[in-house]
Length: 87
Image (cartoon, rainbow, N blue to C red; front, side, top):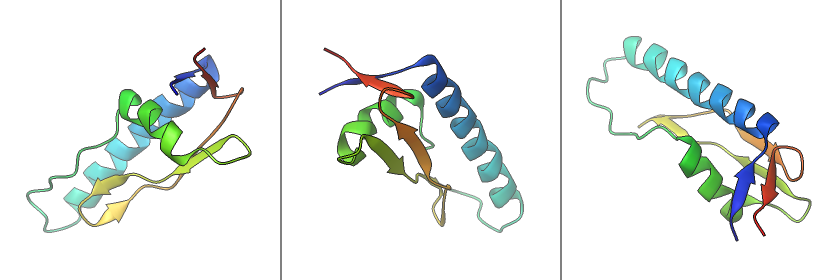
């Protein structure tokens, strides 16, 4: 089943991606890690991930890798507020 972000959900996802990018830059600048292979999430990856992590209450909650050694804070999206099912 496919999902689509609402306007509010798009704004949350864009903000989350920006947070991941900024946090990654800070962590890599403060460490001795020169080559980091972690791929940051994009909107398409997050939307695809909703089906895997949606719970019975219609909530999506997942953390994403931002470096090889650190994960993001969880992204929380709610069905019919942040995303809807494509019919």
